Image (cartoon, rainbow, N blue to C red; front, side, top):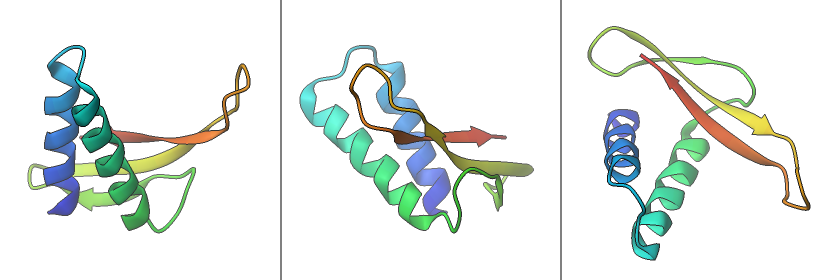
Length: 77
């Protein structure tokens, strides 16, 4: 259930165009909450989002232009 609620929050935040700073902070916090829930990195985790088989994963994005490496959330449903 937490995955589904957070996915909805992320979708809403990204569909509204340029977000004010507080929405970007909310999105970053939601992403960190999902990362904390995932048992592994760089592989898919099967989840039930309520409408068929889905997968969620955190994939490492290499460092570029001096920015640190980070994890990117990916959801397939």
